[in-house]
Structure formats: C-alpha cells, structure tokens
Length: 557
Image (tube, rainbow, N blue to C red; front, side, top):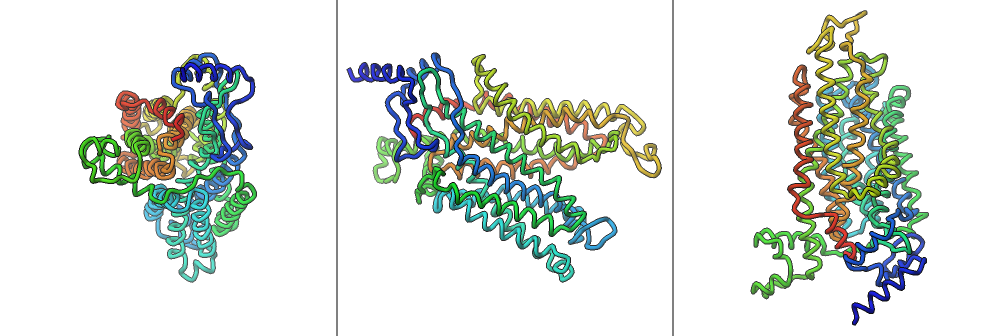
C-alpha cells in the first residue's frame, strides 16, 4: 500500500509545473534545502522520468564565479612567474646574454623549475589533510593563500638589483618557491571541490525537464578550466616586464593580481556553501583502507562484515554507509593509475613541439609562440563542447559521462601524437638537412634555418591536444570530486593532483629520446601508449563509475 501511495504522490507532484526541489538563493544549504519524495525517486522511476523529460543545465551560482576568479589569480601568478624562472636562474646579473639574476646555468635552471613544479603538484596532499581534517576548504584556501603571498613577497624583494648584488638571490629564490609551492598545493586541492560543493547534490525535477546536477557540475568545471587558461595569459606579459623593467616588476604584478582576486571572497563569503569538518575523517579513511588490505577483502571495513565474521572485538567508529563510500572510492581511484601516462605525454608534447617548430620554416614566428595557440583553442573549444557537441550527443542518446570523456581525451591525444609523428617524418623527408635539421647547409647570413616544411602545419596538433586537455583535465576534476566520500573531497582531489607530479617524473624518463632522428619514434611510441590506454580504461574498470556516482548522490553521500 505504501508503495502505491508513494507512486500516486510522485505522479501528482510531477503534474505541478513548479520545481519541487527547493533552492535557496541558488546555493545548496543543508538546513534549508528540502527534497520531497519525487527528488528521491527510485532507479526505475528516475529512468522513466528521463524518458519523458529533457535534461538541462542548472544555474551556476555566483559563488562558483567568485572561486573561479580566485583560481584565475593563482594561475596568473603561477604561469607568470614560472615563465621567467628559466632566465632568472640561468643567466647572470648584468650578463651579455640578456637580463638575468642568479647565473646558475640552463641545466640548473631546468632542474630547479622541474623541482618547483613537482613540489606544486605534490603539496596538495598537505592542503587536503589540513582541509578535511582540521580547517575546512575555505579556511584552508585563505591560509595557504597567505603562504603563497609570503613567497611572492620574498621573490619580489630578493629580485631587486640591490638584493641580488648583496647575495640574497639564491636563498630568497629557494625560500620563495617553497612557500609558493606550498600555497599552490593548499589552493589547488581545495578550490575545485569547493566549486563543486556549490552545486545542488540532487537532480531537480521539473514538470517537463530535469535540471541535471552532473550537467551543472560539468559546466562549473568548464568555467573553472577556462579561468585557468585565461590566467595563463600572464605568460605573454611577464617576459616583457622582465625585459623592459626587471624581474622584480614581473613578480610584483603577479603579487598584486593575486591580492585583488582574493579580495573578492569576503564580500560573498555568506553565499558560499561550506561543509563542516569531521576531525577524524582522514584517520577513519586510512583505518578503513588498512582493514581492506589486511583482510584482503574490500568488504572488511563494513561494521556489519566485522560482526558477521566474528570480529565483535573491533569497534569501528563509522557505519556501513561510510565503509561503502570508502570501498567505492578505492575501486574508482584505479582510474588515477592512467593519468600519469597522459600528463607525461602532455609534458613531452610541450617540449617537443618547441623543438619541432625550430626544425621548420618559421616565417618569422618564434618557435615557442605557437604553443600559445593551445590556450586560445581551449577558450573556443569549451563553449563548443558545452553548447554544441555534448547536447548533440545527448540527443543521440550517446553517454557523455566522465569515463567516456576521459577515454575520448586519450584517443584524441593519441591522434595528435600520431599526426606529430607524421609531421616529423615530413620534416626528415625534406631538405636541406633532412634527418639533421638546422645543419650547416641551412645557414643563411650566419643564421641556421629549418627544413622546407612550414611551421603552420603544427596548428592541427595544438588544436587536437587542446581538445584532449579539455576532455581529460576537466573530467578528471569532476571524477575526483564525484568518487570521493563526502568528507574526503579535498584528499581525493589531492590524489588526482599527485598524478601530475608522477607524470612529470615519468615524462623525464623519455627526455633522452628527444634528439634527431629519434623524435619520430618518440611520437610513435607516445601515440601507441595513449591509444592503448584509451582501450584499456573502459575494459579494465569493472565498475560503472557514472552509475555508482549517481547512486551515491541520490543517497546524499
């Protein structure tokens, strides 16, 4: 009887054109957010609703835009300062090569820049523990932003000519990149989960359409990724500040931009949806995983499993729901194993495209300028995907879930590498230097030139990799958020960020192959690895993460 009555109530509610899921100011709030029976429909009911209704985007809350401004400021600083690090560390002060500071040489500069990037992508684990265990995401972002600003101030002051002449450069630079890397970790591990927290955790049901939470979340992350790429335009500005004024001016501008972006938070702090902190969550998660490992059974963390198997002496401070979340997260984190492969290929792509461009006829275009096409392409690809491609695929009943998007990203990246290998073959097949570009035969007026292949043929490669980055990177952020237990969002996000650090190390193993004529085979190998991985991802993951994520979200997990 109860079931029939509930079905009648569901039918009655769905005939009402008013949205039955209550929203407060566009921001989810546990104390005011009500979800009637229709918003918690069973799987069968939800499927029938989707058959009759059209899925649409929800409104992106103002708080998401505010947080994206903060991310834009952080990325403006990161790309702005790292762009000029090579010259700052490698060239000497008042040297003949151009403006410099520390004079440690290009090899040392490359090593320090690699170490800095590794630290930036490893430190999110620290920021995640602080957020999930102690302070919460917003407070952690503000605290680590202070560390970031301390690093920028140290860098700005010690890069002044007077400070460099008094020997403060190396010590100041080392201390600065420590604080900046630490600040980056605290911001990066928490800002994307905090953005996702602003979205309604349930699918709102209207009379004739579904306001799909996952679609709204995907759109929020697309805006987030666009903010990252807009921030990266600082790489155009700071080299000119370095050249015309000095390194200190580039660092000072980055500092001011971050301060301005952080200043928007206090004005909208009341609109931010912030989750309370559970002080034992990290301990409980590691304890649960250790039980799974020690018993070699993913169900071992369930209190009910412990009781059934005669382990009453072990008192677990969580319920079966938390154990289910942790079990699912452990299973789903298997996908993270594949991400270092992509980041390694993406990092090698950035290096080899500059080298390849130098082997071609540049038509007066600097060999490191074309890589900026990727940033411009991303800003165009994001709206094309969101407003044209994804809606078109949904009308064809083609799934655009995170697993499918990540898989397609690997495929497109593999195609980009295959095209790069073909282009490298064309370069080696043309004169005047064939497999040894920029040889003595190419010298004109004392300047070596590339082979007779236009650098403009690189443009499709950059566009393809931009498409792959949008699919893989944005989907990775969303995937990391959706698979994580409710109180471990930042920690799982930090594990995703850690894949970038591992990828940078993995990519370093291929650096010895970056020479002529081996570069052709390097591209071939990378294309094969990416395409093979794209085949493995959907076939080896035994769980349907999209379906599981939906199940947990319906339960409010």
